[in-house]
Image (cartoon, rainbow, N blue to C red):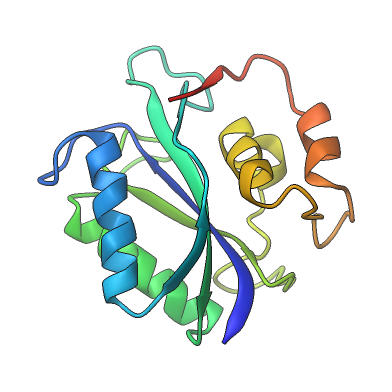
Length: 165
């Protein structure tokens, strides 16, 4: 079973499960029901959309550490099925959504071609990924740059609003 797999969760629209936070809780239950072992979970954070979109509600975000025998591609397929079941329709990039699930890091694997790209190609630019990740994995290092999560947080672009929920 692969260890130290990190999944980012986010939502800024309600779903059949209820509020964005309720949708994220249901996603965690659905992951567990699918045989994914949830080892650690961050607190929920509220964050402004990135890139900035004043017409969108703020997101609820978090990160979980999981273990699974699924390959990265199979795990991504499961995550996308859960997104679709929550009502997510992929239209334009960065659109508001009832559920967004991303593989942030899959045991340090680096994949620059194919699907999924690993580690997530924009994770180091996102406070809504790095702050929850630091909460559960303070010693984590980026598999490509080798930078610590604290160093990545220190280098974040300005203007990302985020607060503990």
